Image 1 (tube, rainbow, N blue to C red):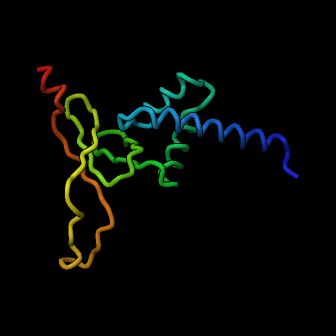
Image 2 (cartoon, rainbow, N blue to C red):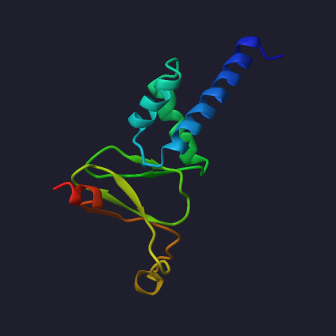
Image 3 (cartoon, rainbow, N blue to C red):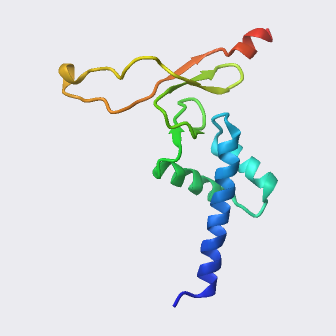
Length: 133
C-alpha cells in the first residue's frame, strides 16, 4: 500500500514537470536553465531551481529536448528535435537554429566512423545587433 504522502509528491512532481515543460517549450529562444527557472518562478514560486534543472535533464534523457553546449557560457536547451545546428551572437548572446541543407558527412571510409548525428555551433553577429550599430 502506498502512503498518501508519496502519492501527493508524485502528483506534485507531475504537475511541476508539466508546468516546466509548458514554460520551456513556449520560450523558443534556446534558454539556459536559469532562464527557464526565472520564467517558471514567475508563474509558480514554489518550484525550486534544482527541480527545473532536474526536469530539463529528464526532458533531454527522454528525447523531448536537446542540450546545446556553449563553450563560453551556460548550456542552452532546445525543443526542436530535427537535425540542425545553432548560431550564437557574440554581441547579445542569442542562439538561433541553423538548418543545413544536405546530408550528414560520410566519414566512414576515412576513419571507420559512421555519423549518426551531430551539431555545430557557429559564432557571429545576428541581424538585430548588426542593425543597431
